[in-house]
Image: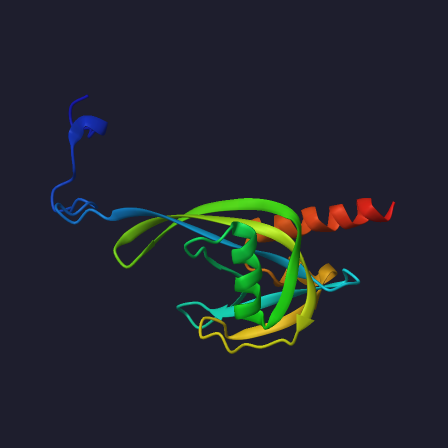
Length: 167
């Protein structure tokens, strides 16, 4: 139709293209492991708090990068100890979450293997530089405290496992 700008009409005058030529982001894959750490009564779980760019405290499950030669289970136990001060052993796999984000001019595809772990020692500590706070939180309160929907879903799965074990 005359006078109408269709999809094939191109960019409007004076508008910049969103993509800058020659500045493509490098895509990288990262793999981490961590999980839901519960006490021996399975009533409380350990969460870590980190500050986002706006200074808001976001609560999440402990996790971190897999080091050379480590299994995902070993990484989960090591990262829990480093980030929370709590020693724990793996009870079972809980699920895998993957997501994309951009950081330092890179597009990152991150895969995180989560496990259900049970605490067997240690004391809460927020000495890890990446962690602002650490807390034992009642399982019933995790949905309201966790910042990320995918982690809330894993916690619900763990609670269902516990309820099934009690029957």
